[in-house]
Length: 127
Image (cartoon, rainbow, N blue to C red; front, side, top):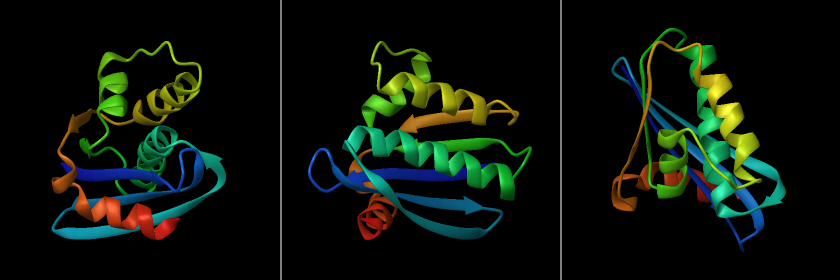
């Protein structure tokens, strides 16, 4: 099982944004920071962090069980319910569905911010 910690950040809300991804896999640790070239809300950045992490996992850990963790209740609730009325979040949810589909299992769990500090630092570094 691959453990994936994701976080998104925006300076201003909306504003310049970045995502951080911290992965624990097979005894190794991987860190990723991505600057997003557009003005986004913090929530949008959080969704994009999950999308970017799924893309990384598809390349590096295909066919693995994925256990994601996020400190964004909105992201976790939307993904767990597999539903949103929010017109901004809907295409992001659709992309997460598409990118998660090839994996045998994809789980996401909410964690407190203090347990997600590593991904948070990577997201802030990306801004």
